[in-house]
Length: 441
Image (cartoon, rainbow, N blue to C red; front, side, top):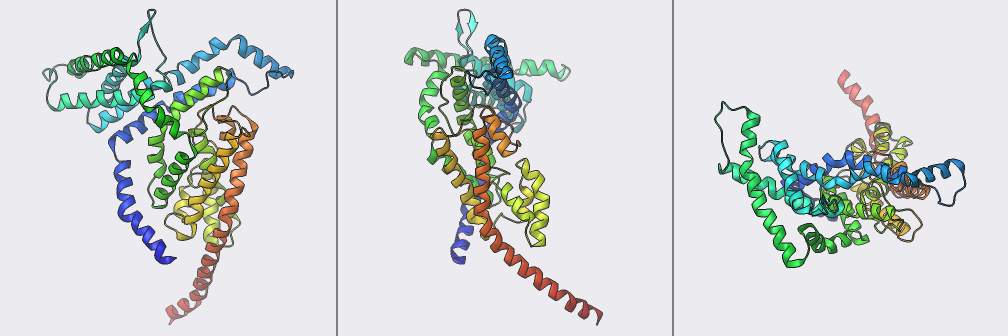
């Protein structure tokens, strides 16, 4: 067993860790992650508005408060939808600017100018004029992949032109703001002369504008991302990387965010249309069923540590319980420790995978409401699960059940580790008098 574990650790250190490190530092993955982080406040608030628009009550209810809320929402739905449409409905605009600003910082360029250039590049291909008005169809999740591609293209084209001095350079005496405005003239022209003809060519050849054509190409990937095998693979990669001390969640969420946002937009559109929500594996599912208390679902372990007989573990439990409530578990990961600790490898790997499977089938069979809202990742698991599903009770109960299964799986491994530490503590306590006597001599 020890030899097998040593080989596993060696494989992680020699092969997995360097690859994950390079992937995590890849500038486009970093930029996409930064773009979503920049857009996150707008999307969370926009998602929260859906709770007011679609209150969690049965349409047939006769309870006075619920009936009044439902009638108010139905009467003023167009007005109430406006904040949602200007936040979640414009997510790709925020993401485009965020990606452009991130790549600008990495390429030593001005973030605001680059972000605006990326915004123009996206709107150039994704905002056709219909009946004298701009279409917003692709400003939400349907245009997410187009936003990623156009933002990367525009920022890299700007960087290339600047590196090769293909810009208008004014004398140093000209104010910086004015000089920067002239510097970006050629990049703006370049983006227009390349993306607009490409969009017209695609539309002429396929009858679809560029965002529609891109969505048709990635549709199989989007569908595959919302499957049990894809979810288990994402969890497995995240857990193995974290066990090696690499922030696997950043890498996995950086890759999955575009798929999650596209599927979340579909779920929200279905909710607005009064139809069943089609997608299961979204960020709310990831955060509130698989990462309860942080990666590895360690909040139940924190509660178990509070009652440990080992002083070290009990101390770590006290340190980790409050951060764990808000899904921050570094004190437990590095304090217990769990990272690179062979005793905790199996539960750390299996707890989120088993909970993922249980939660998947609970939602797939219709026993639990599905995610329709974006929540902060720091929201405590059971509360966040309910919030993400329009304050339904069943997600809260499922999250609590996942906590119980996590505690049951961690418990025997914790007791084994505890016995080892108690033995060490007893040996150290026995050695102290001898050490003091030797020092006195």
